[in-house]
Image (tube, rainbow, N blue to C red; front, top):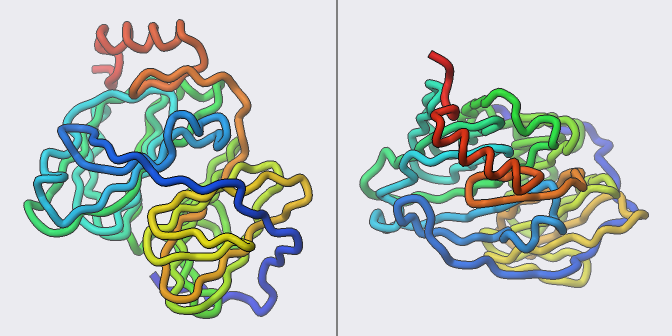
Length: 294
């Protein structure tokens, strides 16, 4: 898509957030043995509410991803899959089907329950991307499942100085992203520094926010954040955004959202508010209720 040309007056950040702490992800596997790094782990769900999980995957070895993610259920949250490189086919129990490929995003609302698969449509080459889990408020956990593919040209992008910003969700400098969500109001940016530069982004003071660097390294305040590091941004009632700079080429995700402040009850692919709701999810799955009515 054509890059948006920004007005001369950009968003200002007068009280930027600092880095609270940094951490590395945990190497693991999921699906039918797909190797990945769990960047946002379950112990961070309260701190980074409304986000439940962030996985990063990336390999040139087909054996690391070729078996993909066969049929599996979800209930109670949304998945946002961002493909940097590669091709993955989605099919689900509501008849949705789509091809996720280079630069595209798949946004799925599991809601009251869906069974889906995500299988590679390549036998060699690089497969790289991210999957983010976004919690649903209690009032929306049993909503009708929903799915949409955004191909790479559908993702709005803009350039600030020499830095390219892809806006997956929310808005940046007046440019609206591909998706908008009420209640949690997620912001999801993929920021590409092409050389030494600085980027400012307004973020509500009551939002939880973090960055993940997947190329090069960046600077937030007095802290350098290196490759494959997650940096939680400090909550501060006076903060109005974040300022990130880079000494050279780098790429990172900036993700923020308003917390739900609701109980979280999770067991595997189900995220509800109570243990009883989890039990009901398993009962409903066994009863064949995770599909469209005939």
